[in-house]
Image 1: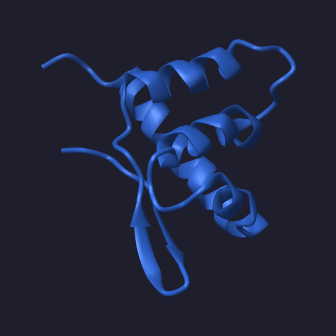
Image 2: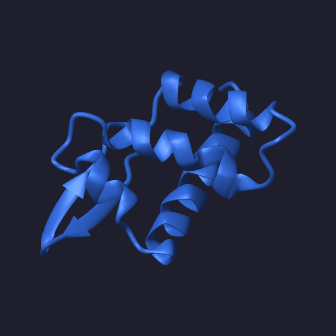
Amino acid sequence: MQRTLTITVNKKKIISKPFDFETMCIINDAHNDEKAKGPLSMCRDAVDYMFEGTEAAQEVISSLSVEEHTRLCLTLWRMYMETLTAKNE
């Protein structure tokens, strides 16, 4: 199952690229940076990365409300934590 983020812009649903190893690395790098505090600052760049190449240009992502950006970051943080703690089956 591919995990993605979704935003709505001008009544159009935009789906991000799938959560992948590169997304994990971006979050992990921020997680290991002592300047980053909390999932919102650790996932900000990963949100940008996941929407690269979609109809949601950087200007669109930057213009999202604080609430929407927070939702995206927290969703990514949960994906990251679930991946880190998943047991091998």
